[in-house]
Image (cartoon, rainbow, N blue to C red; front, side, top):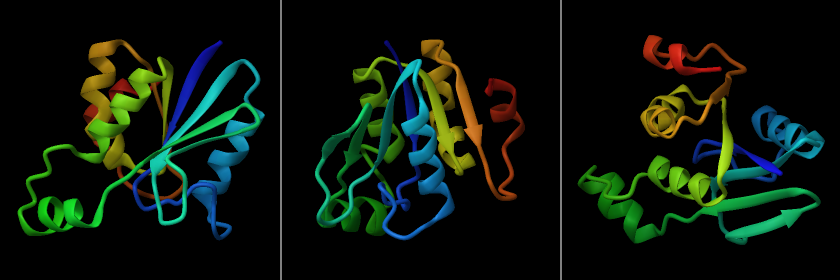
Length: 141
């Protein structure tokens, strides 16, 4: 069975803690997929497991520790292993046939070149008025 990787920005906890639109939409879309195996790739928040399975849906979380965040994201801004690189690594491990970016054009821009090189189609769903760069618009299926 082919895999669809649902990519969430680092600030969206999954499964949803509060009824927020993006997380609920991802959960509903992933649970309804029948022809593809859904894998949700998101950030890990306190108290969450790095990976879990819920029905046919797999959830893979990216952990960013306090020291890493302080040194590489706040003090130096030289992030040696960005969130999108980690996402791409997980999507590759899961052999994703499609990448579905949810509600974050910056995430689409950051992962676009890797997806194009690998020949993996991209889908983006933006529920608000966040602008999408013209180059990113051209690569979206």
